[in-house]
Length: 199
Ligand code: ATP
Image (cartoon, rainbow, N blue to C red; front, side):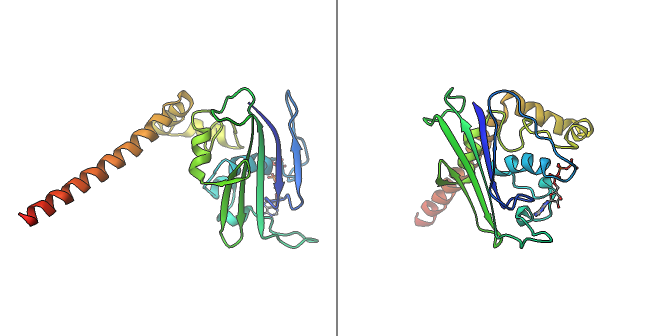
């Protein structure tokens, strides 16, 4: 699996439609301070489902939308699309190419897409679960991340190791199953109450 390109429109400092290609091998992005290098890394985290505005150096999610400059009005929408080559089937899906998109409007409307079909955030999270790429993964190390890991509490560090080891996915499945069990127990109790009332 390989990241082929990113298309950014209206995300942070990228007011104009910007496409960045990642040919095979290593790609370095260089530029002066404040030119938007970190914004590119953040756009990847965002499209993969980042939910915390703080993790994107903002206070509210609409802060990621281009807020205007001296010669440009602010925009109403941010959109990011990642194109991934999946011919090796690293991500278990019938598609050999995956386009993952996220859009956000200033009024808060937001949507996610897999290959241009609207989907839920959960579909994207599930797609990348256990691949080491998804939201919160360590495939993107932001400025300050390394220091945070060193300073993290043992329980936080454990969750990082579990994530890397692939245990996280099973913990999520366990949580979902436990919720369903609790719901079923509640339903059974309710049925018992009704039977008791009828008797
Ligand atoms: P450094 O090398 O100093 O880390 P950088 O190249 O990583 O810098 P970024 O931090 O990605 O730069 O970009 C910061 C720039 O993005 C700032 O000029 C900031 O004003 C701009 N910016 C951030 N959010 C928005 C937004 N919503 N609208 C317009 N510009 C924004």
